Length: 148
Image (cartoon, rainbow, N blue to C red):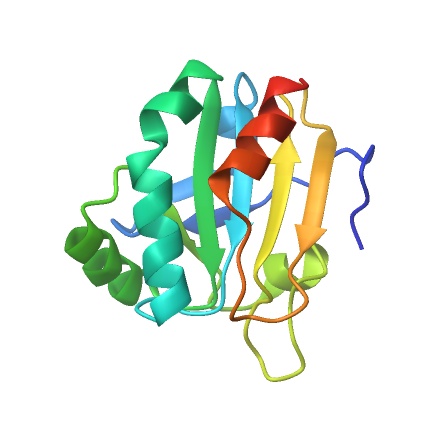
C-alpha cells in the first residue's frame, strides 16, 4: 500500500479517448488521483461535476485531476461527455493500479480515495473514504494543494 512520503509508482492506463496516459507525463504538475467506484453512480456524478466546476482553482495550483475506476474507457467516454469533463478518466479495467494503490475492494471495484502527488512524484496526501457513498469536498483537496 502507498503511504504519504512514498514515491508514487508510475503506471499507464487508457483514458476515455483510448489514449495511453502515464502518471509520469504529469511530473511537472501536482496530481490529484481520484479513485472512484463507478461512472454514473450518484455520488461519482456529483463528485466529478464538482471537479469540473473547480478546474480553474485547481489549474491555478498547477494541479492535474486524474479520475481512475475499473470501468471501461467506453463507459468513461460517455460519463465524461455527459458531464462535460475536461480532464482524463483512466480505465483500470484490469484492476492493477487500484490494487497497487490499495483502493481495490474485495467486490472488485475501487474505494473512493484521493492521493495528491507533488511535481516531483511524491505522495503528499492520501485519504480513503470509509464508505463509497461519501466524498471529500474539493476544498479539502485544495487546502492540501496549497500546502505544497
